Image 1 (cartoon, rainbow, N blue to C red):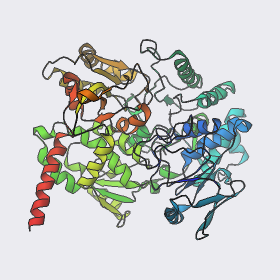
Image 2 (image 1 turned 90 degrees about the horizontal axis):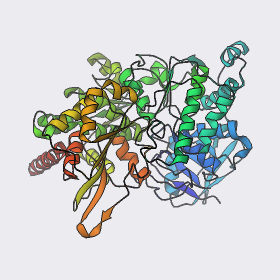
Image 3 (image 1 turned 45 degrees about the vertical axis):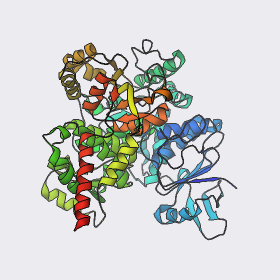
Image 4 (image 1 turned 60 degrees about the horizontal axis):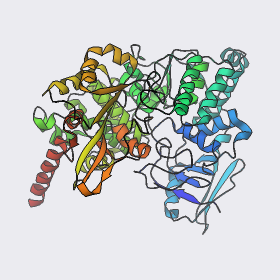
Length: 612
C-alpha cells in the first residue's frame, strides 16, 4: 500500500516543497512538515510559481518525488517537469510519477479518506486505479504524461518549424506532450518570450539548458530573462558562496548563448519594449504572466519553466487557454465594493490612508485564493486611485495563491474598461459571486504578516524591497519618504532593494539618494533567490529581552514565500512603514493604519447592527 497525503488546498511546488528531500516547507499549507517522497499526493491543483516544474525535475532526479500525484484539475506546470525528465534525462530518473486529474466531483469524494485509508493501485500503465479500503469509491483516469498527441501539424509545417534541427525537434516533442493536457490542436506564432527557468535550484536545470546550447539551440523571437540566482557583477562583494555563484552564472550564461537578452528581471513589463494589447507571447514568472495578461492585455498562459524556452526556440505556442478570446472571459465575480466603500474610502486623504499601498498585495492574495482557479472579475477598485505600482503588487500576490493567469479589474484593466463591457462580463459569471469581507482581509494579513506577535516588541534587522523588482516611480517614492524628516537609517538595520539594471540606470537620480542614505541595491536576482547569510542576516532571538528580529517587506509575494525559503520571521507592511522602521529599527504597528481603523469601524458597525 502506498501512503497518501491529501489536502483540499493547492500547493506551489516552488516555495512549497524542498527539492532536496521532498519535505513540504510552505508554513501556510495543511501538509506542512510532511514529505512527498514515495507518497501519493492528492491536491486540487498546483498553484503559484512557474518554477514548480523545476522543483518537479529536481525531485525526480534526486529520487525524492511522489509516486503519484492526483489532482482535481490538470496542471501543465507539474507535468512539464516530468516530461523534461523523460525527454532530456531518460534512464537517469529513478522513477517518473504518474500524474492524473480526476475532476471536481471525484476529487470531492476523496475528502472522506483524509485519514489515510486510500489505496492508489496500477501506478504503471495507461490507467490509474484509485479505491478506498471499503471499496466505496473508485475511479479510472488517464496518466497525463501518456496522453495522445493532439497537435495537428502536416509534414511541411513541422519541417518549417523544426528547420531540420534536432534541438527544435526535441522542443516540439516536449511542447506536443504538454499541449495534449489542454487538448490544443494547433500552434500559433508568438512575438516575444520571457524565460523564468534561469534560476539555479539544482543540477537538473543547469544540465537542461547546457544540453540546449550543445545542440546549437537559438531563440527565434525577442526573449528576455527573468531574475537569476545571484547578482552577476557583485556576487563576490555580497559574500555569495563561490560554487553556488558559479552554477547560477553558468545557467545565465547558457541562456545568453541561446540568444536571450541580458535583462535578468522579474518585472519585464518595466523594460522599454512591452507587449501590446492582444499580442500572443510566451512568458514565464507568475507575477509577469498575471501582469502581462491583466494590465497589458497581452496573451500568455502561466507557462512552466523549460516549456517557455522550448516555445521561444520554436517561436510558436499551443493555441489554448487565454490565448483564445472566449477563454479570457471571467467565471467568477469577486466584489470588493462594500469593503472599499465602508472601510477604505473614508480613510482617503487622512493619515490612515497614507499607507494604503499595502491594501493591494493583501487584496491580490485574497482574490487569487477566492478565485480557486477561475478567472475573476473584481469589482470596487474603480472607486479609488490605482497606480501601476499598485497593480504590480496586486498581480504578484494574486500569482502566489491563484492558478489563473488573468484577472479583470472592473473599469481599470484594459479588457474591462467601460460599463457596457463590465456588464457583459458579469453575465458570463452567472451567480458565481463572492463578496470580500473583513474576515478575508484579516486572514490574508495573518498569512502575509506571519511574524506578527501582538505580545512582543518587534525589531527589524532587514528591510527587503523589490519583489517584484522596483520601478522608477517606486525609487522616487522611497526618496521622498527618506527626505520627509531627514532622519538617518538605523545603524543596525540593513535595507536592500532588488531591481533591474535598466531601472537603476533610468532612475539614477533617485537611486543616488537611496544609496547615500544606506540602501544597498542588488541587480540580476530577486528575493525569492536570496536565501542565505550574509545577505539574509542570521536568525536572532533573545528570549530574555522579550524582543525578536524579523525581515520586513512591502511585498505580498515575498511575505508569502519568504518564511519557507528563509526560515525567518517575516513582517509585512506598507512602503512608508518599511522606511519608517528602517529609521527607528523597529515595527511597532501590529497592522496597517487603515486596517486598524477599519476593524474599529467594523466592530462599531456590528454592535449597532446587533442592537437593532
